[in-house]
Image (cartoon, rainbow, N blue to C red):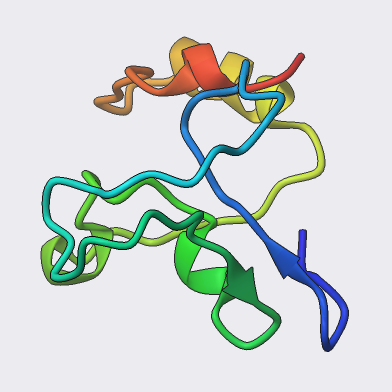
Length: 91
């Protein structure tokens, strides 16, 4: 999802968040509580998990309309595969 110019989004790996409360992060260089928001130009930076350094490993990223169709083909193939992050995928 990309916000329109002038709009901001909050990206989180916690799908149950309903209310964003300002807080001071452990790594913050300030003492004022805040909610981190991302604008139109930086939104793509947050579409993928931070713990997954795909660029330095040479891993290709694909955008698919139906991930589960692709996954069924992958599991049936002779490719080496991992589905460690599939728990986050919607059917």
